Image (tube, rainbow, N blue to C red; front, side, top):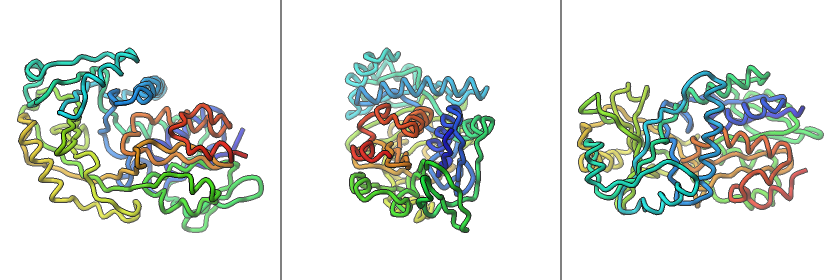
Amino acid sequence: MTSIAIVGAGLAGSGTAWRLAQAGHDVTVLERFAPANAFGSSHGSARIFRYAYPEQEYVHLVTLARQGWTELESAAGETLIDLVGSVDFGPLRAQSGLAGLLAAEGVEHEVLGSAVARERWGQIAFDTDVLWTPGAGVIDAERAVMAMLTLAQRLGADVRTDFPVVRVERAGAGYRVIGADGTAVEAEQVVVAAGGWLPDLLGDLGLPDAFLSSLPSLRVTQENAFHFPYRDPSATWPTMIRKAPQIQTYALPGGRDAGFTGLKIAEYNGGKPILSATHQDRTIDPVNRERVIDFVTEFLPGLVPEPYAEATCLFTSTPDEDFIIDRVEGITVLSPCSGHGAKFAPLIGEFAAALVAGSADAVPTRFRTGMGAELVA
């Protein structure tokens, strides 16, 4: 049994806690606020679960992640993904190419002409062919975090809240994780799943210079999400992505976040850059609001084009939007997830467990720096 401290209890951190506790490790989770708090990237009731990716490896990883979600739902005794399906459209979405990648993984899908799609979903004004994936849906992020932490706790994990980590230092053969009030937790290994706080922590983790220099640059953005009311409350809405030169948007039923009465819509990567999560002001960008309203007015006649609720959240991204999942010596880095990691939470936990066990080859090479495996003690 290895003692492991996990920094951060978002989707990645809680998924890691569950998987490591399953493997019999002594797990301590250190969360700066409370799990699924509104200051990070894992709060609320609405994240898209989708299979459609423009790369085969990602489609395959989603199929693996779905197995993890099925296992999690069974263990927790609750449904965490609402399978409303997804529609992908727009002149830059490459629906036929996406369909070919889905077919190669055996993912159920259908390509529809815009007129046929409009007959099914009259509340959406499709302007191109549409890729329909019935197995996609909406993840309840908050409930997923709590489910994974609860399962981890049942297996002996210790979850500590209001514990902002400020640094990690060597302590003999292991590590000492220091909180803002000076409280210390000692562990043989540390997993850092700090999301938007990672830029603040990187220099205080005791990571080797060679590893730090191999990391891609990190970009934290404060994104804006808007909730628009349904004109017909009985209408069935899928999740959607529309990609066009002017704007790329995503939308999904908002669930509890929207009082079950509206669609959550955002411009992908439409937020303002900030240095780290510490610098967020949670202020909505009025220019971005107008861009999203214009999109709703043109393409979503089934909605009233006036948002009745709005919120910010954080994306922490690499330049190519891949993840960082790598271990150096006794520290595993699991951030960032580049704005599309929620659907992979159980799988990210599996990857972390493999890294803790020294099995770096279990993690796709695209998520590793190439330096971490050489520096594993």
